[in-house]
Image (cartoon, rainbow, N blue to C red; front, side, top):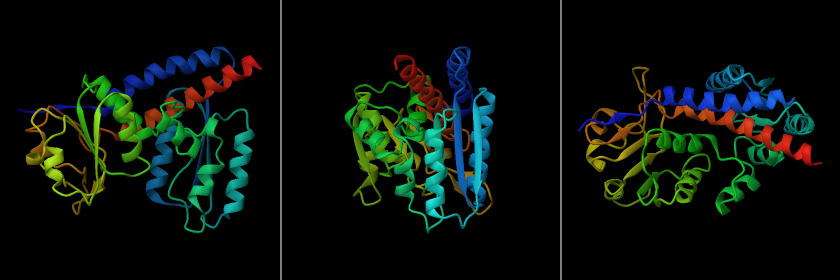
Length: 288
């Protein structure tokens, strides 16, 4: 068996086209969805991520602001900037690129963003809404994974999904979204005893550990859908995921490559959340 490769770049373009239609409809009614991205400091990886987010906005005709603050910016100054953006009618989504410098409390920063503009889905109110099934915005990477499964024709309802990783950014919200889609969900961590026993039971396996090639083909159920959220740089400079792609693709039914799998979907769902935020705020204004 050779797995079907899930082409994240192609699916991302398909999903972006769908959301561009919705963005264009808003623009006809006088609202251009707007995203503000704040970066504090000069982390090279963060710069790349932010540039890609701004580019994605341009592709869909969205308004975007790219705000660069120096690494010595005070927490107070950053919070003040967020409050200004909360009140700015041109801005429907606010994202602070993590990590922030150590002298800034990231929890305070995320809490300061208006829940209605929290397009990353990290505000406690939005996390709670996701947990109770009344979701406003889903965190972008898990949301993107769900779209990849949907567009690839992978059935979720009634299937056993195993999520490896428990981060607030991927693991926990991923499990909640799979639960909402009526999967039976198991969450594994680095402390899980006999990890392979759990992974071999998975119809859908989502791996988000940050450990290069930790999941090999002999740990995968034949025909399973394998979603690799990891992004690791090897000694030779090449990128690889948390799954050993070469051995896994000989067993799995579907598999995402790294790069070109989950990554393009994360930015795509950020844009989708921004358009959705603009739709919600536009509807609210019409009813006032």
